[in-house]
Structures are given as structure tokens and as C-alpha cells.
Image (cartoon, rainbow over all chains, first blue to last red):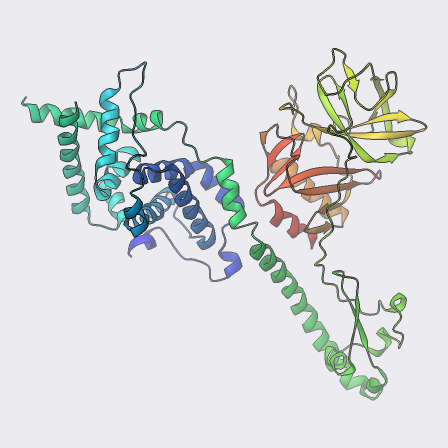
Length: 178
Length: 337
């Protein structure tokens, strides 16, 4: 079983029945929409676009109504959202306008010495997408290597390697900034 | 420990604290109800979906009707085929535009209508022999509230605001206890030091409760009839104290029909009761929004002749405050059948 099929048992054939019941959608949205939005925001560094992709992700959830294993809803949503972020990031339009270059920059709190934490957030922002998504899924969303491999549809070895290399890159960036 | 080791340990501990750091720095980023409504608009409340849902049900009804007609046709052809040629038309009536269409003999024969059902008279008054209804009617938006001026007519009792309905009541049997008299004129609610104020009622006019609808409706006695006021929210004040939706929307199973503008009607008492019970049990309070910007209405007709109104916006309705009710339109349509 590959890719999104890992989380899906079977989809209905009827176009009408395919749509997820509104109540079920509302429950999933209220539980996971913030996580999806924040991951998209980190990925794209652009709030409006992140909101668009969050919206597209939930529209896909409703219209395809995948039968997800219990507890796998968030993984499915993040997989779809990250793929949409990737598509957007790869798009010529995005490269042309370079969205976010001047967008998301975290600023240290005036009343708290969180300079190093802010430096870390900005360093994550500067990582390339494949490292950034791995770091976010592991350290922010708390997924293990196996789950990240399923979400990103890559091998567990690749996930481990990306995590290790991402940490090294972050160390280099922080060393330069701190 | 060399410098690289120090950096690695530091980065690991920083990364382990990443959820706290991100949540703290992105606390203003929230996927709220506005985004949720946008998603619902593009899916559940899209015209295509509503039409598809409705036509799905209509197709099912027609499938049943077709089966019945075919059976009747076969029976008719076998038993009474010699009389077939005396019948020229059947009548089809739709609630969409109240037009009457005649269907030629051949079509009628195919549909298997019994001769006695139409008895040769095409006058509308006698044409109910066969009525095929297609309830695609879209009632015109009509507000149950009395409209007037910049600020609607209200009575404010102890910070609870009641809005004037357009229909009056001359049935004294539904009027309950006297709640008090109007003590002051006020242009706006809460703009008075007295417990009962109004921009509509005259000072000393009497206010009464309405039987079985305390908290939801009040009646103002004027010239041997009663003006009725429905509880609403105003200026971010909705529920007061321990009030719940049931307290401010107390219809007490007395609903006999409901109209949702742009959609249609629930016409049976039983379905109306079930729908209202579902709303009261499953709605979640969102805010004190008064719903004045909402574009649809739900009018609830009660046994005592009174019509109440809720403002509707997608899966939200404004009663006394705004409530979220998942799948509002689909649920309503399911009770229309």
C-alpha cells in the first residue's frame, strides 16, 4: 500500500455519499485546522497563501471523504497540505514573486530573553523545504521517523538522514547568528 | 565537550522545545470559524451540492412513482383497455410556478393513469385527480420583524432586549402574567436607569409574558390587542446569567411549520418538532452577534398563531446570540420530506 492509501480503507463510489458529513468535518476541523494552518504558514512564510492551502486541504477532505483510520486524520491532512505547499512552492509564480522573502521573520520578545529561540525559528525558515518539513513534522508535530516516512512517502532512512542533516544545517546557521 | 558537541546539545534542546516556541510566536494565527464557513460555503452550501442533494431525493421519489405507474398501467391495459381512448389528458401541477400543464393522451397512457382519476374535466379546481408535485419553490425572503427606522422597536427588561414582531395578537388566552409597566423612554437598549424601557411603548403601558414562552416572547398591551416582542441580542449582550438557548428560544414543542428562505418548508408538526429539538440540542453558542447582516431567515410558525424568526448564515443562526449548527441546510432539507 502506498502513499495516501495507507490511511484510507475505501472511498464510496456515490458522488453524493462521497461528501463527508458536516458534523464530522466540523470535529476534524476544530481539532486539527490550527496545526495544518501553522505548518503551511511555516512552509510558505505567507499567511494568506497558508490559509488558502488550509482551505483547499479541508475541501479535499470533505469532497473525497476518505475513510481514515482513527487517529490518522491529522497525518492525512498534513500530507495533503504539505503536498499542496510543495506544488505551490515549485510553481513558477511562487519562484517569480519569491513570496515570503520579506514576509515571515520572527522578532525577539521585548520582555523575555528568547533571542536564541527566535534565531532557531528564523533558521528553520531558511532551510530548504525538504529539511524544513522533516523538522516541523518531527519536532513540532511530534511524528516519529516511521510516520514521517509515510506522510512524505519517502524511506525511513531518508527521513533519518534529513533530520540529521537538518540539525547540522541549523547548527551552522545558528553558529553564524548567535 | 568540544564546541560542536555544545552546539548539538543546545540545538537538540531548542528543537525539543519547538512546539512551545512556535505556539508562543504564532498565537495570533488561528484557523477560526470564518475559514470554516468559507470551506462550508464551497462544499456543503454550494448551489451545485444543494441542487444535487435535492434532485437526488426528487429522482428517488420519481423512481417510486414510475414503478407504481407502470404497475397500474399494466393492470389498466389488461382489465380496462377498451375505455382508454376516451381519455385525452392528465394534469400536472407544480408548486414552482403554479402553472398547469396538460400532457397528451399518449404520455398519459404511458403513465398508466386510471380513467376515473381525471373524469374528463380540465378545470383547475377539479384537477387534483393526479397531482405530481415538484417542490422546487423558493419563497421570497420575508421578515417577521417589524421594520422601522434606524433602530428597530424594542422593549428592554433588565438588560434583556426584545424586538417587535410584525404580527399582532388578539388572543388573550395566550397572554400570561403581568411583568410590569414601561418605566422610561430610551432611544437604545441599556440607555436607561430603569428596569423596563422602550423606544416604542409609552410609559405605563403594561408588559405581559406569553404562556409557555417565558424568556422568548413578551406582549405589550395596546388598544385591546397585544404587540409581540421576540428576545434578541443587542450590542454584544446575548445570554444573561445562566441562560441557555432553550431559555431564549422556548418554543416548547409547539411548532407546526418552518420556512427557510430560499429552501422551502417543513410542513408537518412532527418533523418541525424533531428539527427544532435537534437545533436546541446540537447547536453551539458562538457569539453575541445579532445576525442583522445575515441574508436568510427561518420563520417558525407556532400553534398559537405566532411566527418567530431566526436569521441564518450558512451553518449559523442568530437567535439571542449566534449559534453554530453543523449541517443546517442538509438537516432542514432532510425534514422537508
